Image 1 (tube, one colour):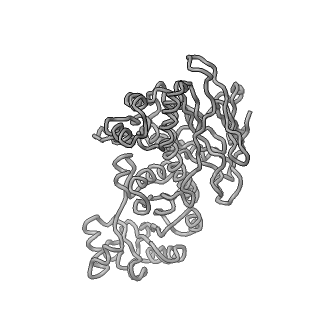
Image 2 (cartoon, helix red, strand yellow):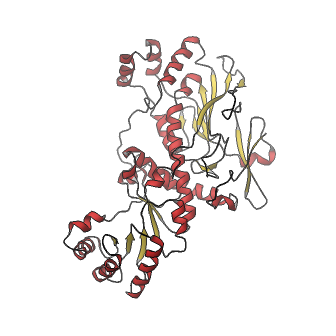
Image 3 (cartoon, rainbow, N blue to C red):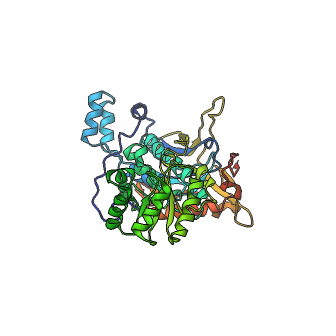
Length: 442
């Protein structure tokens, strides 16, 4: 959900310059040669998953729809292009009226994907579709990387809540997108108020070490926080001595203290000690929250610890070591002429090594076994086999230039959890291995 869904005013800038210059030079040459109006099909896919990943997560679809809708060349942008001498006047005049009027199909946000999966398919004239390459890839590559990392952390955390708190570890605008993608991947809250405002994600936040150090004593800091926020607040207990801080926290807030946060040290050992101490002090319902540069492996190592929630920063907003999914945007089919109804011809790059592509406008479906567990990602260009007809993955996102698939962010989050649950059990293991589903071309 964005601010428009909430009935709030929001200024939406043009996304037209979120592109590489070569998109525009190709546009100009295609218009001049008369091939710009040829019906074309571009597909977004990745040839491989990042090292150690066994499934991917589609993130950012909703942001792509917003970006396509706001891909407009106003006078200021046209003036910039004219001043730089990037384009000639006929091309600038063509851009002045630019609107994407084609169709976009794609895996719905939150769905899982595998090597070769046609995550998004863009259909229109070459001229209108080629311009969208960079903005689509920049969104999908970033958001899908974060969503995949978040999903792995969500698996490791089990039923324990995850808080995204990485805004200070990345670009301010990337932080908002990362919060959104982390929520799709299974996180529960964010500390980033811009993400909460824009996407209606639940927000959290209490205090940092600076607040404790501001006061003359730790007791003074805890007292000020409890008097302001109530006994249900979370007190940070590792500024000085953890044992003394926990004792002081319960004395100040009482046995109804909401939670204590541990941000350093041997989290497994300290969590056990703090849990024992809280219970002895009569604060048996006080929760323990841990932070401290966690990733999915650190979270998994705390599975047996008496931890109630995790706060994750750097690792989730940077994709936990994989900040991109290496998705590409390739022309896979095009008409031989400009006349409406001209048949599409498959096209594909032929090269040595790993950068080969499969031509043709593709469909995708997921084969399942008798228990409903996925066993293969099936991709084809011909008729869809009858047994896969109701298992197709691509859905319409834009029809004749109009967005047709907006949905609340919770729908994408719920979809991801459901899709992940239908994968083989090995998908939830953090061990390295091949993609959990094979890709079959038919």
